Length: 171
Length: 331
Ligand code: SF4
Image (tube, rainbow over all chains, first blue to last red; front, side, top):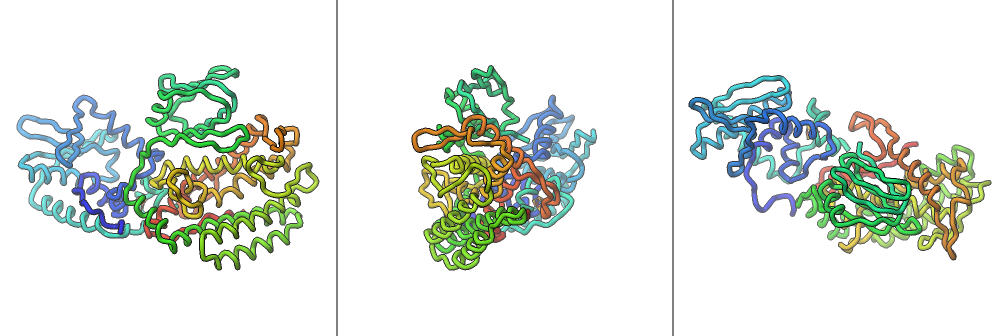
């Protein structure tokens, strides 16, 4: 009865990110089963996002996309995604690729940049055909997953220890 | 770790910048709001809407207690964790009699198992508790599985508690405390006053934790839902009352930290005086901060955290993920 949401909200960036890290996390997020805010890592993540790049920071909302940072250099529009560490790099990469893809669908060409303020690093990203295909594929998988009746069971990975869902999953 | 603020003295409670300011005869104190989880109000306090708005913003619950230390009600700020999915599941399990009974039975199951753990602990210390243990075990193993309705479950639990409270006279042998039976409003003897006080604290503690989950505290399973009162916390508290409240009681009375002089008689009622209440909450807080290793989480957790984990287990049961098994103390 309650398993299938009647209205299917679109796939958003944070969901893509979660999916790459842990499918269960994505399923829970989609149902608004939000993690415990007492979790210190969650607090830290928010603090870092709020403080770094203060000058150029502009969170931009474009339909269902919420972009950390947008700026323009000589000729390009640059969309950036800020992450706490490169630990979840693959996830951050796919999130950013997803944004570039969605922007392209809206007719906006942009380049991407991954920012790791704690490590003082930037990584450039261009949406080429192979990456675009990966995004398309990923979007489909995410949607299939979140429409499942049951959450995927928790699986212990190196992410669990720092995951805000850890108490929920392993209670 | 956020703390619980207990207010015994009477006075005023107000917002001062980003702190909560308590003004009483004891002076003025400031508490940074980020370090607070909930506030237990025992004294007569004045407060205003500005304070409540501040509490709401910062997701802090206020629990109010009456003259006898009885629970009066809570200021339960607007929910901040909302999941339509979880609430629907909660209602679904309430509306389906078989599912409701299944969950309700688990709560009684857990309550009796933890009662037995407490009794065995004192048995190991030489108390003659065998008849009580036997009677309660029989109820848990024979009567409980045979119950076909929530009312029957309540009756079995009532019987078990009857034996259990009688056993207090054996556990506290030699001390100037006796109990003739459970009397709640008002408590007819000091032990009843202590039991009531402890239970209301545990109800409030569990309610605070429910606030930190997606569960709706108004939908309970053992305690009938009527959507106006909090009931889920009563259900979950059943499991923790023996191992939190009663253990604190035995400690305080057994170690003679609390004596008859800590009670006041008002007509036919007994109530725990302020000194006793302060000692009680201090012991309870110590208990709640005690940690032990949690195997699945692979780290140490406190009893405080355990309350939350228990709620997550209920949530996962409702989601059809994992059948709920109540926490049973092993020591
Ligand atoms: S705790 Fe582990 S299993 Fe659970 S959501 Fe986080 S990463 Fe996934």
